[in-house]
Length: 153
Image (cartoon, rainbow, N blue to C red; front, side, top):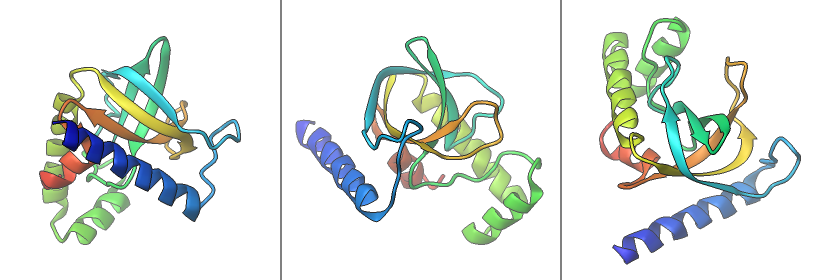
């Protein structure tokens, strides 16, 4: 168990170094420091999906978007994006929606217990009144993005 935890942390450090070396990912305050938020909770919100979701940490609310993964959309609000994703994944639009729904449910289940977020508060853009930030999410079972990929979501 310790070896797996160490490998995860080493992987995060490697990704953090890579991201730092390959681009300017300054946070909203201009800093480039990583922020670790522990004991986070999922906030139920209709906008949550497989790779983007509302989170509470203490008294603050955030929207986070996972680094390095893209789960299909779950509705037809952005048909162009759905067509783009279906083409990229080599599936039909209805199949993309089905996979998106499965990813949404998977993420909701994995985040039903407290989890940890590692972020630089780097803008992930979005259509909410709240800013959305890129993040790595560590659940009881490991890195959430890795789990989504491992499960074909």
